[in-house]
Image (cartoon, rainbow, N blue to C red; front, top):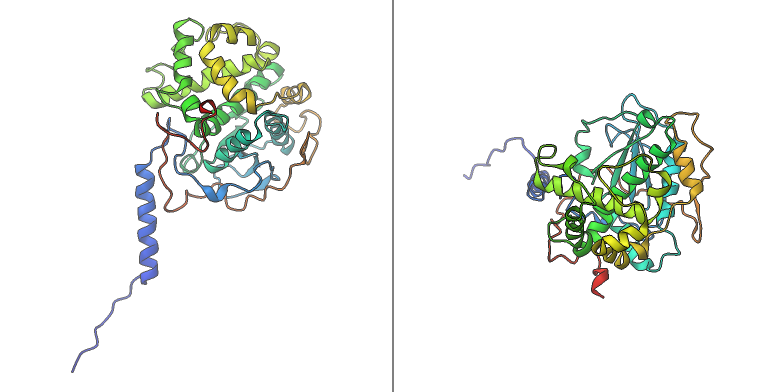
Length: 355
């Protein structure tokens, strides 16, 4: 007689397969390093809505630890209220207004603009908002492209100009590090071969940009150091071109020597060429009213006037409707490809300057 084989309790085949997939995903994540120490290289195509010009409501969450609420605007995830902090919703809404104004419908190349915003969705661009700095963020740093923070109040309390520059600077960091880096790898790639890198070297050689605060001693990892130097250079150059530097930067900088758009055009021709081919076609300027409202933010309930809500973007109307279909802080999708920008990358769209 044939004996019936005995079985031991254990996971089903489906459970085994799921376990293997999870292990494979973990291994893939380890094999797909983040650019500059913070930019995801595994695209999340399921995170991109058909219409990327959308803004969510403020959502309470327990999955973006240590943050307990978020708002997503044009692909940028704004996360707030880590343990012990309570930022007013009005503050987050004003920052969302600023983002929508940076991407107006009056831009000369709306196709390119849309691709930049889609890249921010696809690679989970994120910015945490703090009243005081929190450095240990845990697993969330592995799940979103989060390269910097915005501080509201704190050292900027009663410093209107400083608060404007703090918000504006770090919005630009998120957009250039993720949206522009992914969409225009030849021009804006966070690599040592991109046009941005060479434009930065031009500025350093000319004595117009000093990177001594971002040297090897401060940032030992070379790729992270390059990313910081490049994002800071991009911020200085763009803020000068857009006139924000002249209006709101107070004091004298040892890091940056130019103050007018014409200075950038005349003295940094390599960056000006990048700007003309890309950001000049997709960016708008944040209105003076919104910038002044940002300057009045204190991180408390006595903040500036109430932000109009929902946002009625000029030329687009009501841009509410981002339902955030999947958890924006969930682990990266299983089976995602590793898409690292290199000198030969074409990115998420055709390079603007190539045609």
